[in-house]
Length: 531
Image (cartoon, rainbow, N blue to C red; front, side, top):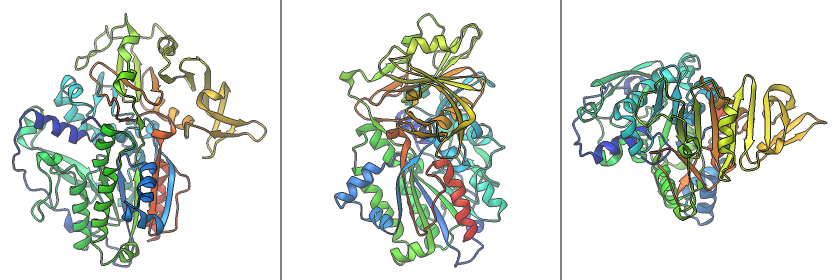
């Protein structure tokens, strides 16, 4: 997969298909249907959260203006529509999903990116980037980290997911194709033999999830009930049709849980390939949403029985075409340093590890003999670099690429931002486009939404000495084997285009306290407590 997501599994299955593997029959899954139905009765309103990968407000607005999105228009006209919900950082789906479902940034949930370096394990963690990078990294470790470690150990056990919180409240929940699904109920992922061959995975993997867990053909509670699009050419069920058909069955069988998370991945790949202006994928999404609403007697009944919430995860910027040199080759900045080659083991000689998340990257310095500022100085002269940041004790430093202007900040202080977070900021506020009113002790954000908390969240997300590097709009970062998207779309960075996503809430007049993805979990819990 070329897309950010951690359509981890989608990319892996596509890779295996390319290697000529054949589909095998999967073992029957446990039947979640006996326990998923809400026990609160028919009068309680259910909540369905549909997370749509790379959905952007500009596409919604253009589609509605052209009268090509009637279902989305219906939901907006009978609800609330926000265009500026702040995503997590880096704007990569694994990190974003953890933030959405735990209500925290990476400094709390501890999943810092699609690819990152673990000081504890002395290895690069890759949940599934591009096919070449996965092959060099090793299919086995990618599969183990994606299927076992992500939910099992990387996601901070001290921070509850919404599924765990709902279980404590006695409410039922479900996840359809969500990659972050940790809950209290026992489930089993069934790994087909042709995936076991290139990996060391067992035939079955016990996991903890919500009451209902569907994850393509790895966990399909409807396997013996309904024929689903879950073959190799259908990305093993990790597709919109599988997700929508599963929801429709739960509606028609009167088995909806109190809360259902539904992940719709298809749009992401189209936008990575064609760029943010792509509209065909959104039109197809609208048709799929129409099919879902048709599961009720009428659209009115749908909104009487269910609160529908549609949300994007990240936006994208248009990457320049190849002729305009859009790819920033990170290894070329560190000539003379011993950089960890892809797929090899860290040794005592290794000095630098690169973890590239499209338009954002972590640059790890494994030696203490030189300060991180020295590495930052090697990067700042390139006019395609936007921000270079690192931490020194409680302080966070940020340098603006090209002009070398500098800012430092730390938590707690007299300045209060729109989210009631307090900060101390020194030096050049324009580096992060901050608007500071010293008289009223107020701080506002410009082109980098909630940037102080988001940068802090990433820099305190996991142990180690590392830089955060972001590319200017139109450019993306790359290691030796990183997937690139010349002429297409990319994300990962801090800017508005990649950080602001749409939110549509239909079936209630309630609204989140703040328009950030980390505030949606508390909003959901509030909604469910009232039903």
